[in-house]
Amino acid sequence: MKIQLLVTKGEKLKTCIKIDFMSKMNISESDVIPILKKLVQIKTENPPGKTIEAANYLEEEFQKVGIESRIQEYYEGKANIIAEFGEGKDTIILTGHLDTVPAGDEKKWKFPPFEAKEHEGRIYGRGSTDMKGAVAAFVAVMKKLKENQVKLNQKIIFLGTADEEIGMDGALVAKNSGIMEGCSFLIIGEPTELQVGIAEKGTLWVKIKVKGESAHGSTPHLGINAIEAAAQLIQKMKEIIPEYEHEILGKSTLNIGQISGGTLINVVPEYCEFKCDYRLVADSLRESVKSKLENLLEAFNRGNEAKAEMEIIHEIPAIELTEKNQFFEAMKKKAISAGKENIIGVNYGTDGAMLVPEYNTPFVIMGPGKFDQLHVTDEYTVKQEVIDYANIIYEVLIENFA
Ligand SMILES: [Zn+2]
Image 1 (cartoon, rainbow, N blue to C red):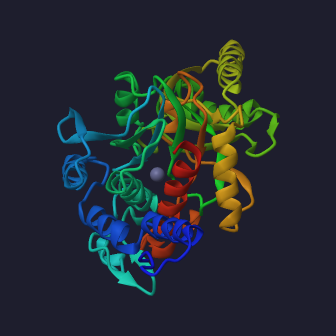
Image 2 (tube, rainbow, N blue to C red):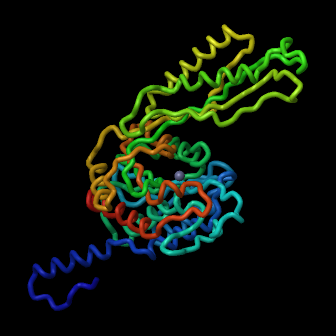
Image 3 (tube, protein in one colour):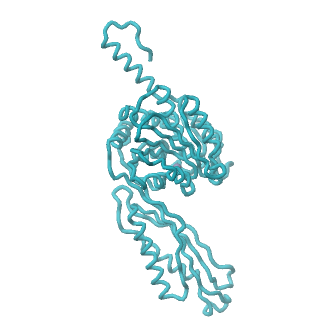
């Protein structure tokens, strides 16, 4: 919008300038959607999880407006990118991961997974929802802040990570490089359909190894059947799930997702192992589940000829926003004005699990993209939602920190 030239009263001039500023503020389709498309076209499937090409591309985008960035390549092609805008001791971090899950059988896709085809207001492709839409929005926000020479009283940092889909090593590298020091608020742009998320479940993966003794299949009484022993133990694993019910996340869960054992049909199996995936709704439950598991196995070993032991394969903490500060309230207001009133928790893990705990940093999980589009064939995101999200973040930063 242009400032009217024929101005007779000072008041009118003020209004016009304000309107002009507001229109300049808006992030338009051309600011964000080309970045999203380009990101989808750059393969970052994990495995192998190489994100260096995407990081290099984003570095070029930042360079166009004179924003400095640095790339943390911590392992052959696995790279984070960190870009900074503005001044200030305190920082606000906008974070999203650059890697995606694999596309799977590409022949099953109606819209090829790495072409970023546009159809009826949607962008199709692997990562369009999880989560290159939010990443593109963050980059557009940073560029717009710089272009409009907005002065904020906190430094804004964009953190694009590698390896979120496999263990969150990228976020861990960023955290270990000190990025969370002085961070007053973290926005994790994982898909929430623009609802504000304030909690996520933690993960505890445990392998149970059961040892028996082999014998000929025709004389099972001479051996100790490890598979039968494992079957008994599997029944007991559910008893370990904590009773506690979180007001947003609900109850903790268990999935026994893998089992292997035995060599041949006519051999008494001497070994069997299975893997338990506990999702815990509060971090305080993690240690108690571990000690209950130890007690359970101890009791089992006392009463059985087969012997079982456990190995923790992987664990990440549950996180929760405990102090609902002014910035959270501002995000909530924006979500409500976008018609999203629910405050939610998410079942999936995010990089927040690595970034939040060190300083108990206040955070929200909020981003464009529908839950039913996570990791699916013909993944898509709604273009307008990505543009709306970019404007929400841009406005919330200006309204609270300019
Ligand atoms: Zn994700």
